[in-house]
Figure 1 (cartoon, rainbow, N blue to C red):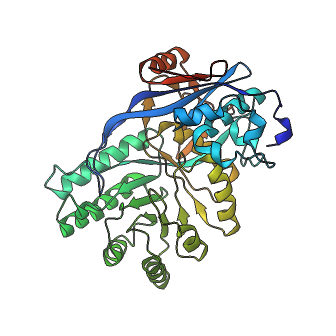
Figure 2: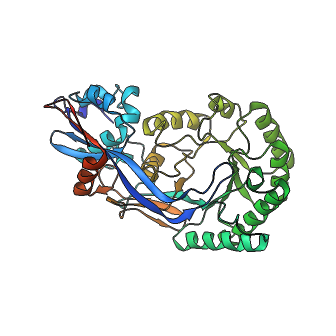
Figure 3: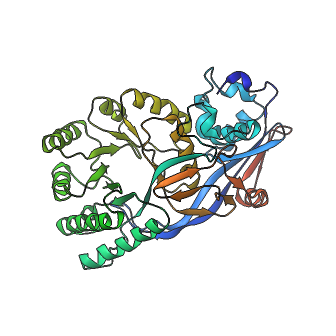
Length: 392
């Protein structure tokens, strides 16, 4: 992005905040550390007005922050390289990028001139179904549990998915250790049958394993062709060093992925040292611009990028746009969510690929009236001419 293309007269005229609500296609069960996730979802959004034109984007902005941003020149929010400055990222980067894309009639993936595999029909990016949670805990028989999760995987396959991430770690909290671990293994084997030999399978333990249990599980699944193991245990330099050495000795080509939640601040360093292969910080926080910078750094070291995106529907689509700027990008994490008032119909999944449309901004359309109503119910507005908050 060229900073000189941002007009000096563009200023932030209005910031409106509200939440839009929706639900998953199927209720999500427990994982290794939490109970049932359910169906209900919401997206926190800002509608920004600049030069009389509006745009939308995910945001966790507060009214206090909005007061300081209103009236600012858009060009002052970017550095000389066209990257959004740190103070404005989490609060405004998504609506700002959407606004610029709409003004310039460019998809966000093309704005930083790094687009890969771009065609007139947009981008095609690998994705995976992330919906295979512990929906089987009420079942006492492993065979029945496998059949249930296989049926859920078949639902994903029918929707175009070919790659799957499977929650494991049932023995960490919800089941006796060995019984839960045995079921973990059986379910992964069952999903392999659904995915076929070419589908990539990932497992995510949400830190419920320890080093020895991780090795036992990976040994049992050595003929399954796992692509990565995610959050096997809480990030630990020595444990990851040991696990990486053990995998190399066995010539077992399973990648180590980590980075969600409150990840160790040293995780990137450990990745640079060869102890971790795939970084997974969230797409909403620390966000898009942070990922542009981190992705470039990871690319220099031939490391892999797979932003976490569970539970935030807006992030799914933002991740698709990010993929164009990072060579080591692996997957969009697909959580099948419908948000009322957010039209994502220009996107689709087919044969394991997430298709990103060549539409302006982030390619999403919003129901202005519905958003305005939600603002009136539990949101707020700050306008330039009054620089005061109207809360509802």
